[in-house]
Image 1: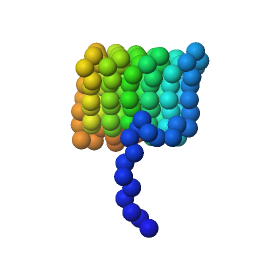
Image 2: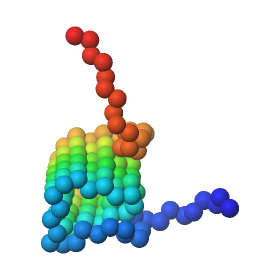
Image 3: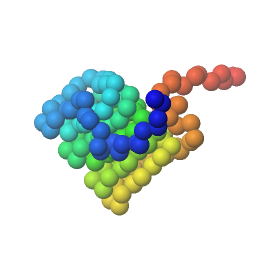
Length: 133
């Protein structure tokens, strides 16, 4: 009854939400499952499961998700468990992840932080630190 399923690659998941090429979305996007973005998002993106950012897709804002594949352009920070930057992918911003794959030609300009608890940080707000003045 509780058998472990084989993991299905993000590229093979059923997409529940599609922002198609030519669409422009101004505002924050939240979704519970798998999302593919081929258009333009101006705002923060929070996806519970996974995100595929297509070649023509762009996000200007921060992204929080479990796994992400970037074929397009991100201008903002990414917090995720697994990040794949494909050859056409461009990221400008800081990245927090546990797993990172970059194809030849893919670029990232910003800070990279890889920790064992990257997925936890992606879904829980950071606690403020006390500073003694």
